[in-house]
Image 1 (cartoon, protein in one colour):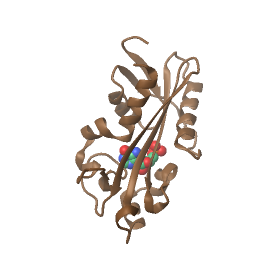
Image 2 (tube, protein in one colour):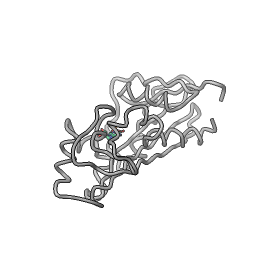
Image 3 (cartoon, protein in one colour):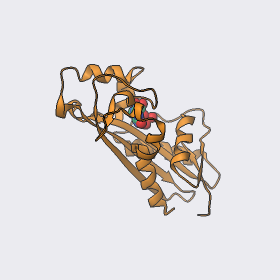
Image 4 (cartoon, protein in one colour):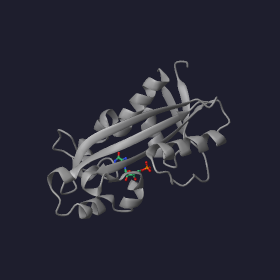
Length: 190
Ligand code: IMP
């Protein structure tokens, strides 16, 4: 595969491409240039991640890997939802929406997990995957300023600080996406 491999990341979010590059040592990751992206209508993270990778593969003519990702949060009291609907559930105010949904709920009901699924498709159409989970619980008030989405109310297992307090450097080593990236690297044999 060579010392430095290249991939195109099929996401409309350039920050995520930069983040993924940091999570895949030895890889150069550039965002896919595309006017539109397919809607995320799958019923699983894998389906959505595969849909994005497949779409990128159809546009990318260079012999590079194409990677798609999907992620979400699952909470015990919400029947382990919103899951694949996390982006739509949270809207402009993911933290407020989550705290309101869990009002009056204590203990086990606040158990939560972040999930990330990565799908990579080679220039020849070979497909590899990597999945990652971060276990934790939902706190009672937002704390911290780093990360995004639900991070100010997500406390990883064994921690008394939120992901937003633990920060981006901690996320690079420990997040669901970091774990999925490590699993993908293992599948890639690099
Ligand atoms: P998507 O993978 O871009 O579809 O986003 C899924 C949604 O899950 C995001 O909009 C966030 O609400 C949530 N999410 C996924 N990963 C994270 C994370 O690392 N921190 C906080 N929220 C996340």
